[in-house]
Amino acid sequence: MSGTLVLVRHGQSEWNLKNLFTGWRDPDLTELGVQEATAGAKALADYGIKFDIAFTSDLTRAQKTCKIILDGVGQPNLEVIKDQALNERDYGDLSGLNKDDARAKWGEEQVHIWRRSYDVPPPGGESLKDTGARVWPYYMTEILPRVLRGEKVLVAAHGNSLRSLLMVLDRLDSTKILGVNLATGVPMVYKLNADSTVASKEVLGDMSGAH
Ligand SMILES: O=C(O)[C@@H](CO)OP(=O)(O)O
Image 1: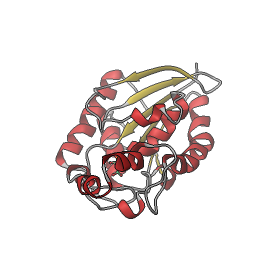
Image 2 (image 1 turned 90 degrees about the vertical axis):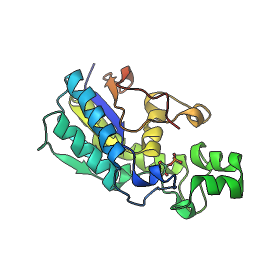
Image 3 (image 1 turned 120 degrees about the horizontal axis):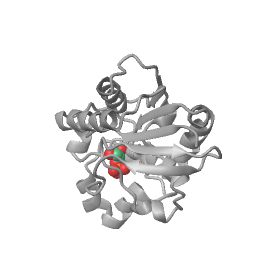
Image 4 (image 1 turned 45 degrees about the vertical axis):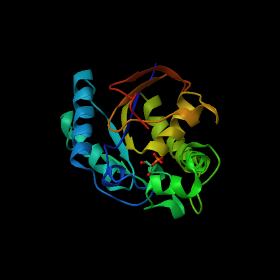
């Protein structure tokens, strides 16, 4: 067994609350989002983990979640690497639109395909496959080598950038990933084998309400 990889989706953002497609737009966390990140931090503190390094995206909601977690586990000064490779999937022309308005305009099924399918991009945006094409190489070159060296690594990122990583870690194919939703602020603790496969996965919280 080698190191530990902790993945966490940012807490609720202002645009999650307003039900808007967000993508690369940069809203802040809501008060609830701060509470969710704080609860995730407490779960990790209770778990007893001390990180060696943290990664986050170029977006405020993930960076703040990362900071809240590091403060909560007593590591406020830990090095944090920020990279847009971990950004949310770019929602293109849908960015800033209301998700219910989009359903009324294009239909429930089309919107679900844009939101959760593997390889159908929203107009002008990235599919999950496109997102993976930047997340996976970044994971392979920057994150995984540290885990394989035995480090404990935090990744605070986004629903879809993390879904693309889950396809690799949980061996989910393009059909199975369709039904996967991540709750905000709930840490997923992976222990990896030396060959980079998953030895164990523990979810520190409730994923059931995720949508
Ligand atoms: O709006 C977004 O960028 C994402 C995450 O909130 O939405 P979805 O759940 O549709 O992937």
